[in-house]
Length: 131
Image 1 (cartoon, rainbow, N blue to C red):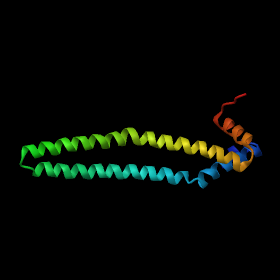
Image 2: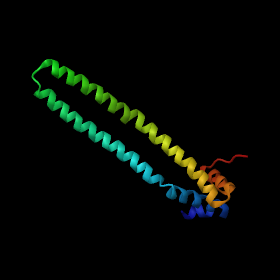
Image 3: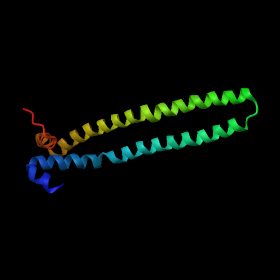
Image 4: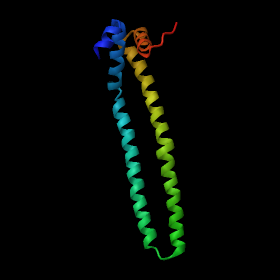
């Protein structure tokens, strides 16, 4: 908590924010995001290793039919990895992150026992005031 935020928020709002952050810790949200990043890293490494292995097989192959089959398989596998790496993985991360944020909001409101305090704090922090 910074001095600025402490000076800006009232006590119920501070309680709501602290409860919100505690719920992130209790729900192990950072661990979840770290695991998602690790899975992505493993897929990238697997993609690189597979590329090296398939390239070596293509170079060793003397039979053109076999080489063509390996190239087609390699292209299909690379396309699947690419689609996961650049399309699916970011969407999965966003969905998980958004779900965890909603869960932290709800859990924080329950812990603080003042949902209004958390709502007011989030409004003040975002700079938007709603009626």
